[in-house]
Length: 287
Image 1 (cartoon, rainbow, N blue to C red):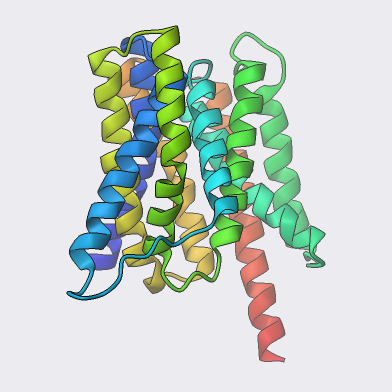
Image 2: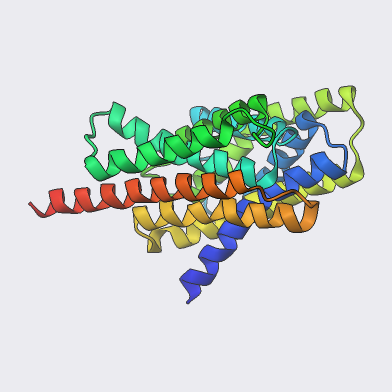
């Protein structure tokens, strides 16, 4: 039950990033550069504080992570912010998490993994549903917003792949946020030149960085060792549904039939591919 509760908290935190961004841009006149910088800085402060609280007396302070992972983290956060000026919370979260999972599966294929028939079927269903979601029409998401969110998802997929196998994920995540601090401060200043920071937008950015990102990631990495890889990937597919519900309830965003159908196809297809891949790996390991 503890694992279930902590996993649910982490998923709500991930979805909150989307809802907070939409609240900031739709209701508080946020500017994407300053929003991204404040979010990254707040996450760095909270994660650094967590590490200091966990540090045993006399232990040296070290900065984990890598510059490549920090660059991927920054790319994800900046593209995420700009995209949410143009797309809704549920649609953005769906595109983001679909791009993450499809990007990681695509990288596995590029590195020599050979998916089975069910995996290819799942990917085909997901891609067809994605094509339906973004196809021209009155309720299609904004093309530039879609492209930016795909880029954000691919950056997060790269960040995940770079951190795979980390022996201290919380330490590395804190290090990556801290490495982003200099650029975060620069873009906050650049954003202030373009547009004064609205107090509400700043509050949403701090909540996203400190709570939904900093504490959310801490909870996620605490529970992650108790989940199988496929379980961890599939449970993240709940995030778009939570974000869509938040968008409807808090921002009065419309829940269109196109989004519902595309969500079923994309999330169902990705789940099928993940489950099939897990079964294939287990069968191969048993031989």
